[in-house]
Length: 413
Image (tube, rainbow, N blue to C red; front, top):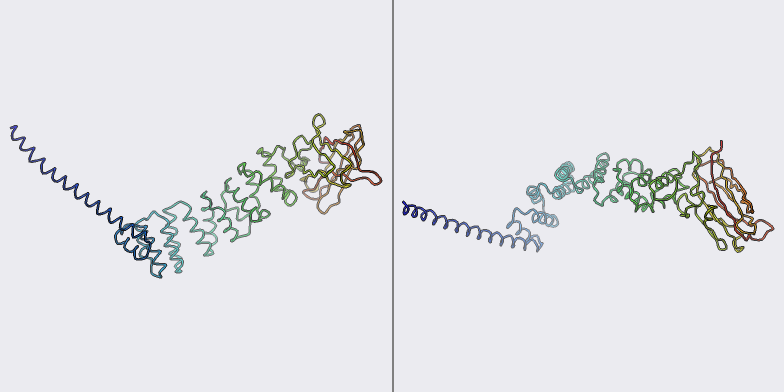
């Protein structure tokens, strides 16, 4: 029995080894042959001529990349690329670029329904930006506004860096800023990009609510630009500039308390306790030669103005845009005292609004604290408050120091 088993083993293993070796040989030869053909096809592809690409496709008929490039060459030579494009989408049905390529060809030839169907197919297999862009542009060219705006929203939902191009296209289609904005996703990064687009294209005045959204949602890197907006529009569009300013105050971008014109909170940094920023609704200093201007410090907490006698005869030292509520009456009050032995005369607070008359009250520079006030009847939503020096007639230019403090505003009954 043992001898018989040995015979059985020998007759079983010998043919199996032979078959296995033969199989390995066939696979190796086939792989080498395939690799060689692939190398030849790739070499022909790299030649990048019409004939070389034909050879590539003949050698590797299942390669969609070869066929796509062949289609481009056929089209460039005035030949029909469609058979190749059809085969490309059959080979790679999930690659949207080839569906878009076919759609573009159909649109060129005036078959718009077919182009639209192919673009929708691209969007169905690819949820990324390219199909959305293609559909948005297609509907823009066809003048189909509802579909265009639908795909504007879809395109902007992708954070792929193409938003400024979408913004440009949207403004080519419409000049209604509110309507345009209604189709944009309310995302912080997008609102920031849109704000910068409006600034760069001189459209901030038409931007509408976007600056307020940007102020609420934008990253800290956008704060300086939003403050520049407050500078530029504090008088041109006071309500919106104030909304941006107050939002930046609440977000800690600037160290001030939000303003409220209806409650009488209309002066930023009224005690000068914070260094003047020269931005937005804060104080803007205009210090001429011959004048030294700075914080009075504790315990006074005010602004210290030193006249050297070499200052101009007439100059504005400080100015601030005040947000107002038209129809309300306000009182602005202050306290002043001399900071030196010399009496300073010629300093005054002035208020003026666009189209209105300038009103003023002098600031006393006496040894004992003196109080003064200025009453305003607001006819518009903003005005300018400024500290001015004007040499009184019959006197020499002032020399000495005066401190102005406890600047306050309230609504009058």
